Length: 142
Image (tube, rainbow, N blue to C red):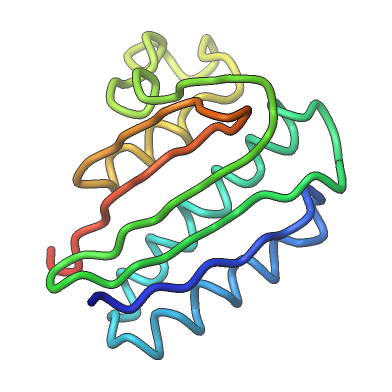
């Protein structure tokens, strides 16, 4: 069985440091290299921020669940929240339309979620039992 850990964090921006510490501790304990751990941290921080800011429209005591599972050549990131239903897979897997526009004409936002998709080998989403559930697989080798 693959090593797995799950933690819940209140949907508050002050929790970002704790989410990063959770990822760092997991990766150190399960022989995940530093560069991959940084990628996973970026993914978790981007998703967490988006749920707080866009999903809940502000801070909340509602929990955001983050699960990590170490596979033979990957880490699976599970992300769960009770914000309104939102399937981010299309935005994760395709660049924003404005990416080719000159910098001064690009809208603010949208690149972080695209970056999360680029750092992931695969992405899957479901909304069930009032929960957004997102799974991302991050390769442990480049």
